[in-house]
Image (cartoon, rainbow, N blue to C red; front, side, top):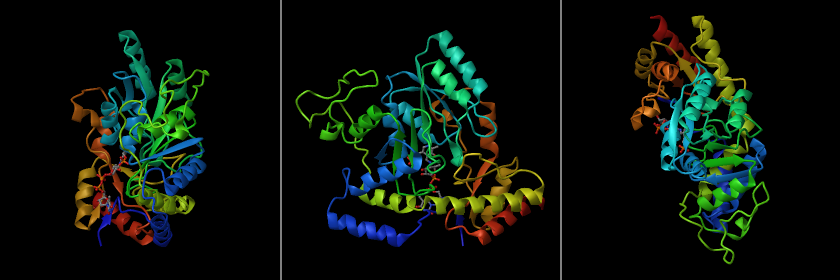
Length: 377
Ligand code: T4K
């Protein structure tokens, strides 16, 4: 049987089916229905966020979040990420500056300091840092926040991989993905988690064509000033252009039925991760399967080896479809040439092994054995 990295995890199909029956009985299929609201409340509970806004996918969630920044300003983000991160910056009308990452996939703070100094010297209008919490692990070095505060920058996290990793929201906002290949599968879907009420209301409008609805009414910002995006007389007015980034009820129901079991999900992924580490690293005597912690949801089994491509070729002969996440540095697709040597090395060496609810201990043993064979024969 073939083994895939992204085979969706569905915790309890019957629970999902009961939600689907309820949705049809209610007759509300989209536009902020019961299951979108239940999902937002559950994510708020799990992530510790005061406000959660559900959207149709994480790429649009990132784009709309970034669109709240001044147009044409600069955002500092890693190039070593999925193309969605960089695409969202451009589509929001912003300009990226690419920062290198460490061997542990976190922003290289020395490079970040250098970039900030350069930007200051050139008087570039930088408005945000967007760290990417890759592979289930969090990039939460206090020095990162100190730099952001010192330069008056927002910190917007691309946390597409990390729902369930932390029960606290870091930075100004975090964006989670509910794509079918993620730990919490909603077929598709994205979430913005934030403690900023104003930002949450803004995103609720943007996801719904920028309509002003009764519950988004006139509000004040943290300085107590009136925020002038609501026409004085009309609840149904449109502030300016928005888009349709709403999550449907079916997607929300799927995500909720999985999120209800987040503890069991993480336990399963963790057991797979630990077994892989034991069967590969201990056998070989060096680290192929990477440690992502201390804060992780174990959703990706990330490996690193100079012989990556040969390993993948061997695995394929046994119908094991490991993935190179990520193969291209995203800046290349937009014609940039930053100096990011560690990122350039990582894309040559990193690969991910199958995990998730469809992969059990016996599968892990078989796949691990093939990795060891590829490296020893
Ligand atoms: N930021 C970061 C850092 C991200 O990694 C992502 C997405 C985003 C932002 C944006 O999130 P979303 O807008 O997607 O919510 C996947 C996902 O499409 C994407 O969500 C994910 N990251 C990215 C890393 O990977 P592929 O290219 O792996 O998909 P695909 O179709 O090749 O599927 C992978 C494997 O999974 C296949 O070999 C078969 C298996 N599979 C997949 C699906 C969807 C199944 O067995 N069943 C399925 O339904 O993109």
